[in-house]
Image 1 (cartoon, one colour):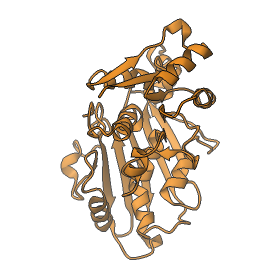
Image 2 (tube, helix red, strand yellow):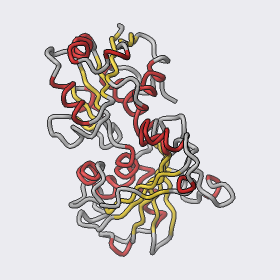
Image 3 (cartoon, helix red, strand yellow):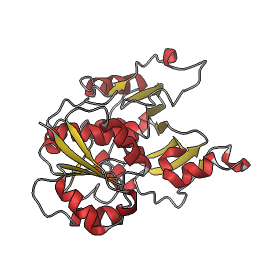
Image 4 (cartoon, helix red, strand yellow):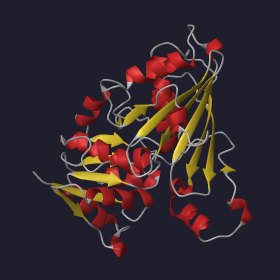
Length: 314
């Protein structure tokens, strides 16, 4: 069986990467829109309703407009914006979230792609909250270091076409502490409040590492760093794209340094646990264009269409 696929926002960073993935998947027919018609309402509406699956790689308002154009019951939507991530009428597209999430995605016609930072935060934290290790009122903090491709065409152009010295060093942003990923980070981790989150953009193209410090004295039971690693390893033992690194993980460092680009060009996410009995440091490493965006979108599509989950992915 073949499927018609339309990417609304095909010229954006996520859309371009989705097209790259789709080119490696058999039995899909990609519907293209002419560049000069990509903002034409009637043209978009016709193509959206022609498609079996529509990827939305658009700002929130444009994604909402695209969804409102659908006038049939067959078109499935995978939205990469933040517009619907905590909407109860949509399914959150993180199949590894819990044992029921894949079935929810498989049976849904409306699925939201998780945010990159949110993916790196939720996957290591949700099992610990769900198992009752971390209390729901834990005062969580985290930071994320990411490549500039996550900022889209404007930020990519800024880094690639400018010699400004301030671009050489990592730059913190969203310092008003109202980052757009915070609602999903709180909601799907199970916490009572959002983490105090600092995103940082670095002068490199892609690769993301979310770092989360924890204090075992605030856990609900006595567990050290090794115990946390074992709990997470057990939770994700059957997941093909999630790898929990062994606790004695010096072999996975490079001269003692952490390489956050090791998952680039894959849909993989690695979880590291560092520390001892008094302090724990969780680090999740992934490609912000892979498991953090377009790779995740393709994984969702595969589940929705009943394909092997890894089709077209590495």
